[in-house]
Amino acid sequence: MMTLSWRTYFVLFGMMVCSEAFLPENIKESFEHLNNHYVRKNPNPDKLYDGHSLFLDKMKDKGFEEGEQKILMIFILDVYNKIFNQMENETQDENLKHDLHEVKEEINKLRKGYFSDKHDNIKKYLTELLALKENDPRIQSKAIFELKTVYNKASILGTSSANNRRRRRHAKHSKRQRS
Image (cartoon, rainbow, N blue to C red; front, side):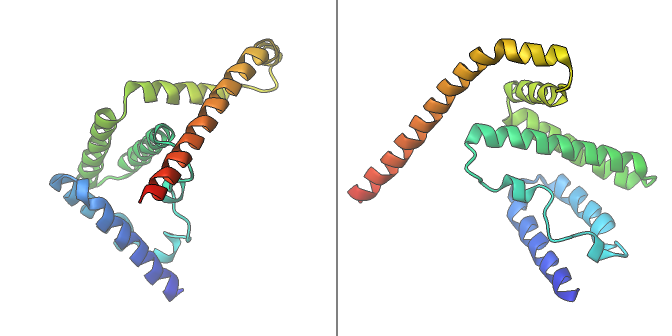
């Protein structure tokens, strides 16, 4: 049990050090207050970390291209917003509410500054797709009707993606041979 706690501490400490480079000073203070309240002063620290990250494992490069990583990040930042909204609604402590609000505002600025509205539209569309009812006869008939066009478009995109990967591998290989 003690090993897990120390391991957790080092993992979290490493993530904090690595991630603080871009945090504005006021947000660092808010983050520190929130960390003190929700993590360090928790009476059951072993219950906080189960050995699996919430977002970091999903953010590791799993072969996703930059556009795909940006879409994933939009979803992650939205989940942070929902989590912090919930925490803000649950707490009676005005200082914590202020800190949570500050962090949420900074997340929203980051989102608006670095991620285009196009990504929001994609997120909205993906959410709508995931909400489709597969057992609805209207959905099923529309899916059959559109299948040929969607299949052809997917084939073109798949071929294009495969060609791009081949070109990148070839460019890397050529670069290594010249070195």
